[in-house]
Structure formats: structure tokens, C-alpha cells
Image 1 (cartoon, rainbow, N blue to C red):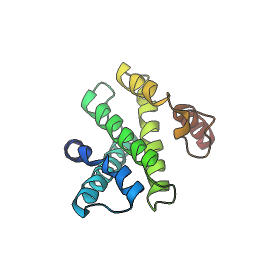
Image 2 (cartoon, rainbow, N blue to C red):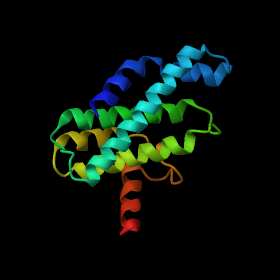
Image 3 (cartoon, helix red, strand yellow):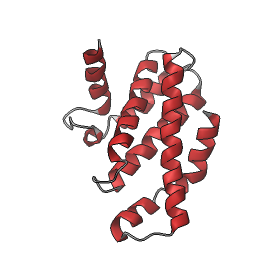
Image 4 (cartoon, rainbow, N blue to C red):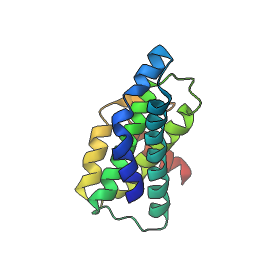
Length: 148
């Protein structure tokens, strides 16, 4: 998780080049690789956090873990907001962002940090996959109730 955090922090300054890549179509290969490395590190961090949560190894009071998940989710949301809808990674990135929100949602009753992160994510309901009328957190509650 720490390695993914460092990668996200390292490559995050290159994320804004995704808008340039979307608008102009041409971009320096190194810049696009760095931007996509941030997305990859974000997806990895969420996968690790999800696995840790399933095994009961993640602690809500551990603010570095919560902050890393939040940073990963926000990076993925930026990707979905600035990239063409037909991008090959779009569906997988949205699913990973939802997975991260589900993990934060499960941790929110144990500490205030995940609650605050979720409150920030609730601001934009258009980030939901398939159900734009719901916020991401409300959608996660719907997904969880269906899984039971």
C-alpha cells in the first residue's frame, strides 16, 4: 500500500496531461505513460485495500491507508472526468473507483476519516456508473444490499 501511495504522489502531477491527450490527441509518450502510471497505481492501491479489507487487515484509524484510498479514488474520478467515454480503460476504472468507495463505506463506522472522505465524494452524483441519480455512496449501499 505504501508503494502505491508513493507512485500516486510521484505521478499525480502528470494527470492533467490526460485532458491534453483527450483534446488534441497527440501527447509526449513519456507524459502519457506517467499519467497512466498514476491511474495504474491508483487501481493497484484500491485492489490492495479491497483485499486487505476482506481479510480484516485494514484499520480505519490508520489515516495513511484511508488517505491513500481517497487519493486513488480521486485520481480515478479525474481520469473518468477528463477522458473520452470510449477509452478502453473507462469501465474498469469506474468499477475500481466504486470498489474503493465500498471499502471506505465499510470503514466509515469505525473512524471519522473515511466519513469525511465519503462526504467529499458525495458532492458529485454524476460520478456513478449506471445510476447517476444516486451518489457513489448511496449506490454502494444499493450494491451491498443486492449482494446480501
